[in-house]
Image: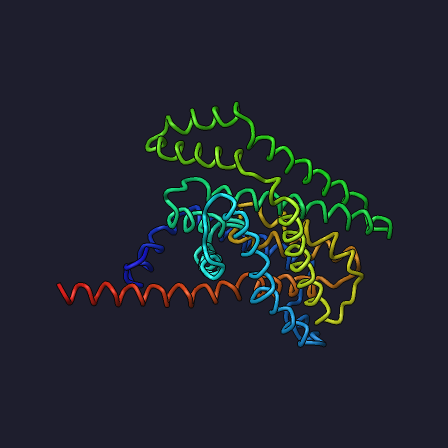
Length: 341
């Protein structure tokens, strides 16, 4: 992408907007409309009910400072052990710009695909290793997230919340275990590669899939397991604490274990790739789960939007600035070289 004009990049992205994109936009809008109608959400009244706005400002510390420090140090550990040595600020830049570039991709983790692309592009001699670091990191994160959900849901169940929440969390946890097993299965790998190779231009995809499979299964996880678990748990807890602070802004002071029970479920639900960036799914999760505690639908809906703005839009805005600065810089270099010629 480097060296291309900003106008060219905008045209390139506009050409990629297809029917699938608009379908996911439609799904997101449909779900949001259904939530507003079913739960009688009054967004404007909810905004007026903000009592302590300084909690929202406090929540901004997480996406701008705390989360990047935790997540990029964690990623650096995963890369270093595979022989990929990148500076912390380089990884931070990749992460911020990936959030921006992956902003409109399906599910709330679409930026991971951009992250994989950028790290693989920088380390072509380590094909598959960069992608493996992101995949393993994400899977461990999901698994620990579901474990947190089990702990929180169990505590919430002791306080009278429906035990079905605990069952759902356990099912998600078991599902993630099955994904781990599938990724390490030679038979499943052979089946996928064989079928991908049959499609047009599938050979290149199959080769990368094999490289990623090899890197994942050769990843020395035991060497970094403890420190990675600590960092991932800190990251997950920080996102949950961010949601807690936003609720506090509305004067809603719930025991933390309720957030520990609901937030992991909401985050996992928002990963389902049927809408853009998890829109609608996340809001539905907030409204449904927090209504069990008597939180008004308008407040839960508004908290969900603020949660998304703070944890996604804010770092995406930083990523946009970094991306445009980088593109302008490379555009000037290209122009200077062409002038000399």
